[in-house]
Image 1 (cartoon, rainbow, N blue to C red):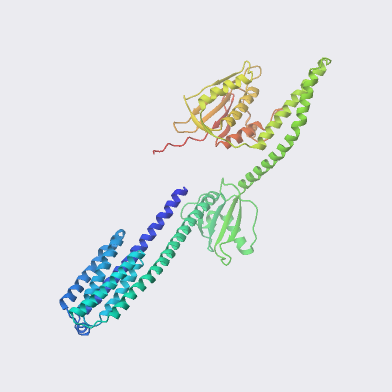
Image 2: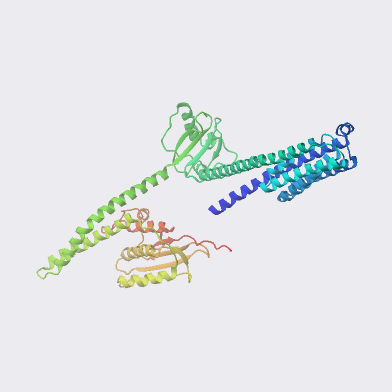
Length: 542
């Protein structure tokens, strides 16, 4: 994305430079037409002929006609091919200098006026050409003036001053140097202006995207209660009004009433309201567009549900850190209690009642240790490290590891894949913890009294490019609807020995892997905990 933005910026600059060169080249060619008209008038006007005293009428008038035709053709065709502007400028400058020299040679008086007219051509070209080429044409123009001066003195028997030709040459070099400096400064200023303009346009697009994607609703309302703009969040919060309906009083009457109350009293009602059926409650905030603008108002709609979720996340984070610090302090005395109970159990002087008490101590110490481990998992929130895995093969390995670690007895744990291979991107260690927790819960609660548990791990995928899914299914009594709505909340449990953190941690680890964990009841009895992974990316052609 960053590379595309840089390429776009360079393209914009190049387009701006080309446009500027084309514009300057066009005016440069237009001035040549004006020069041709002046020379043509000098050569063909009766009064001008008497004034300038034509020595070679045929040469002067032929040169003027040729120059007029050349100037018109340059304007008509050269400007259309801006990419060849260097070639056109070089060729046209040679023609300018040659025509000027021939025109000056054709007249006896006022020939220096034509030499001064050539200053504009030399200076204008210097703003478009490199330094060396510009000084070359200045030298060529100086040579042309000296050449016609010498030829006029020899062939026309004029008394043309060499000093005048030298002054013209000095003027050519001086104007070339000045125009080179001004052209460089002009190019730098124009490039800076183009960059700043491009930056401003990019910034405006970024601001527009940020405002459009904001979770907070934003509306712009004028003094006539007309909504000029709103972002996506605001449209959703006010009920997605149809195009053409932009009167705030019609699309959100309560918001219009609060805006009127704020305009008249400058007081804000902070009670939450719902502006459309099914939309979440919001708290409106009002502010003027500028300090001196009392007409246009910015309205911010803060979704209270987002605020509540943020507060809940902050609370859980703080609680996790506090619980983690407490858990660390509990582990040392807990380890001492467990070790002492183990040593005490090895004594031969204990009767059955004492052995029973030691067993109770060890069981509850294990339960407390499980609680501490879950709390530490909650506090650490380890970052996921996703890998591409085959869910079908992973499920087979998981079942083998689980059975090797835990004796499931008469219970059954099988894999029932619906496809031969299902690829997904997930952290294998975190997926192991999630499925391990779900299978343990199924072994503990997912069976009828007196019957073994039957647990199935089903790997499926909706279509060829749909999201992969892993179902942990049991044939137990299921979970009541009221309880099912709370099972993923932290510290919620229905078992006297439960911690209420297992399913919460499982869901959090799924979210860290861009997956979703949900409970689905099964008709006829049973439970299904489904993990829906992120859909695989669509392959693109190279």
